[in-house]
Amino acid sequence: MLNNSVRSFDSWHFSMLNDKARTLALESAIKELDLKGKSIFEIGTGAGLISMMFAKYGAKRVLTCETNRQLSKQAALIFKLNNLDKRITLLNKSSFQVIEDGDLDFTPDIIFTETIDCGVIGEGFYSIAEDIKKIAQPKTIIMPCKIEQYGYLVDSKEIYNLNNVAIVNGLDLSPLNRYSTKSFFPVRACLYESRLLTSITNIKNYDYLKEVSKTENPIFSIKEEGTCYGMLSFFIARFGSFNVSNKVGLQSHWHQAFHPLHTPKKVLKDKKYRGSLECNGKFTLEEF
Image (tube, rainbow, N blue to C red; front, side, top):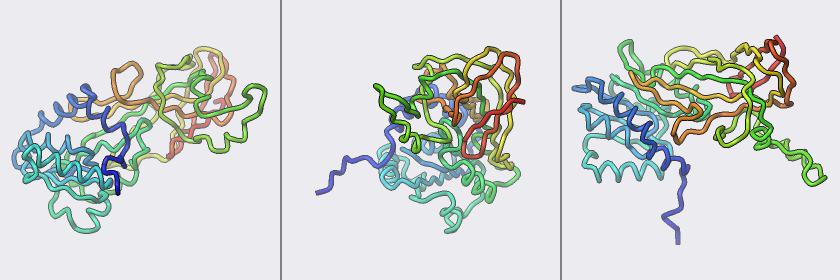
């Protein structure tokens, strides 16, 4: 007998939905729009909260899609529970499949997606951006309109060792590092000892309607000598007049992203270093 309570979606959905700062910012951004007569296409239904907000504040039509079958079923139940099932169309498909199958039989006035992770690109930013480019018109409102990514170099063996192992009790376990994350991984940076080696730098900007550079080469000026173990990054996603961010220190469900160097690097005060952030989030560093 199947256990119907076995979850097939990530547990962070619960903390995300209970993130008051996030939900207030998104509701405020939706509320400030003139939604009368407007058609909405949402990519990534989740539990359905955003679709319901659009319907609640007057959207004429809401089409939303979700790839996870279990989440899709639960969102349908939630729409019905809130008496909004007649105003929202839900498809258990990717945005690519929705477009390919011709399910999007209207030009959306607003396209909404929050399919971003702590390092921005981990939930399919590039493929979703291609889908949005296919259907957006000059007057289409994209939410978020822009995502800014910021980073700084850190000296933190504690964070580095969340993804690396060497000698433990006199025994060498380093072969396990073959399977360590090479791009970036989520971390609650405030829980670990770390030292900032540089100022916060805008390292990349993402726009769903523009071609985003596959590699960025930010320049970092070292403020304090130390060992650089990698780059810590966070984002600011712009939803109209309101922002959603995973910046360190905010009370948020979001983690930050840590981009580890393959080999930690000694850096010198007042020297400049050029970073290289690849499209998969992998980070390298060399003296400028």
